[in-house]
Image (cartoon, rainbow, N blue to C red; front, side, top):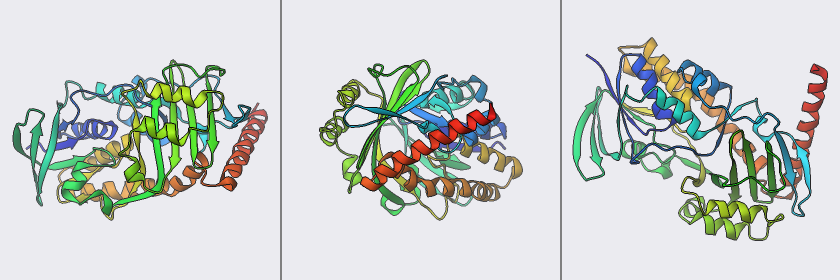
Length: 370
């Protein structure tokens, strides 16, 4: 009998899991809260793990690549002067620059017409059993149905509804690093900079970073530190950022970027949270974390290929393979937050020195390899 999986969330993790499970003979169903599929979005650096997972899922070759041919990054000071620094996208290994929507578009090619996708649908209750889970689904019009699945996968982001229904409230698992992010595509090129130029305007506890993309508008990333990120995430992003960056004009660069935000419907504004849990599965419910992305879907498919008739063993194998990856990324979150949003003057100075050292090191390595 064909096993059925309900996947909550039509994002990168959800579609990756659907493609991988379908290859193993499962019948996945994806539900999505939004009335239609999202497109566009902000910059993502697709690193080695993501590239390998995209290749394994069969979508790497159809994915748009947006890495500029001549990429340069600049450290822009308050007085408008600039200094060349290392490429901020390559602090670990060379990524492919893509938009979130580029990844989702490629994954959609592996889902469309092959998987049951239901828009404007949410899960409102889950009765979790040892062998199956019953899920009450609600559509936008208010209609409700109860369906039974062999596996329920929460791929619905950091503030997962599935996690709340089965494991408990956000507060039990959130570990904040006191940083807020707002990412969105700019509506126009940055005046005074060339195509392929990225930049960072960094000050104590607040930063604007602009990531360049080939053939598409650059992504703006505003970051700032706050003592109460949960309260901050409920505020209006435009008025909040205008207040926080009010005295950091830098030749009109920041006000113009915020003007672009005022015209955008597609933006991310949220706190940076680490989700820490002793286990990611309970009964027949699995959480596919936001950090997992395509890799999580691929590893899940591999686990069921190894344990086709044993869901418990497959879920244990999934956790065993994914835990080291997630731990590694969580260890670096605090460090990266200092690199991008320095908490004091010393961190700001150290960040500038580090980027200069990295730039000289890469130039030296390039000359040696030549």
